[in-house]
Image (cartoon, rainbow, N blue to C red):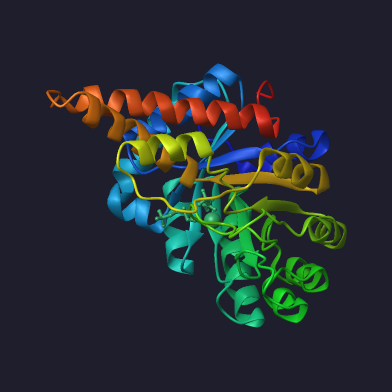
Amino acid sequence: MPLVSLIDMYKPANEQAYAIGAFNVNNMEFIQSALEAAEEKKSPIILSASTSALEYGSFFYLVDLVKTGAAKVSVPVALNLDHGASIEEAEKCINAGFTAVMIDASHEDFEENIRMTAEVVKMAKPKNICVEAELGRLGGIEDDVNVDEKDAFLTDPAQAEDFVKRSGCNALAVAVGTSHGAYKFKSEAKLAMSRIAYIKMSTGITLVLHGASGVDPEVVAKAIKYGAELPGAKGVPDEAYREAISLGVNKINIDTDLRLAWVASVREILANSPKVFDPRKILGPARDEVKKVIMNKMDIIGSAGKA
Ligand code: G3H
Ligand code: 13P
Ligand code: ZN
């Protein structure tokens, strides 16, 4: 079916307390993994394209691949700009048919973050396109950081209320202890769960968990076995998704887990089959591994069977 507005996909997710996975895609194989997983799991899905994905994939190749793939499946698919860096980039995506855009001005000061987000909302609203903003700074909650320092980068519920009212955004990415990549926690995984509940209470809008990859130890071990160097890789445990969702998170962003599954598979094939030089025999099995990861996430976050 044609791409669906993420605003419309969030409604049932919010009412029924499940999350929709936003999976980063950079090329045809990852788009296929994601859409096949969604179709088989009867799950809504968000395909996310970052600024660098749109550069790498070349804007219209990637966008057209997503639209072509979405048209062939029966489940709702949203195309989302991930960490949009400027108003101009968001505008380009809005005009190209994205059904969700994130404007990430979290590195700017509070007033500038509101101004940039509100500008994007002005363009997106007439088209029913979802706008996600970010408040706070993503980063692990380490034991050697004192309470004041932690508070300085985690999302503040009162500030979030003001931000949402004045910017008009539809969804908010919150900083509650997660971070991007494969190294999220030095020791035990820690998330500021009660903060999610307070932010939900103060804003009432859809909350988004970035940096949510689980960094499966088995996948990491397989990648390492075949030559990868990933010392100390650690991610968000499955139980943390469930708790975060029960407190108000309806979008879970996953990129690293797909990359790890892909690299473990490619390394295994290259190591075990030195005579193989047909790319399809390397990329095909990796595509299947990425698909398995996505299907598993859909079960955990409760979106399976919701389409
Ligand atoms: O949030 C960041 C995503 O993992 C995208 O990463 O900018 O390397 O495409 P990227
Ligand atoms: P991970 O690096 O944990 O997969 O996070 C991805 C993300 O937040 C994309 O916006
Ligand atoms: Zn992110």
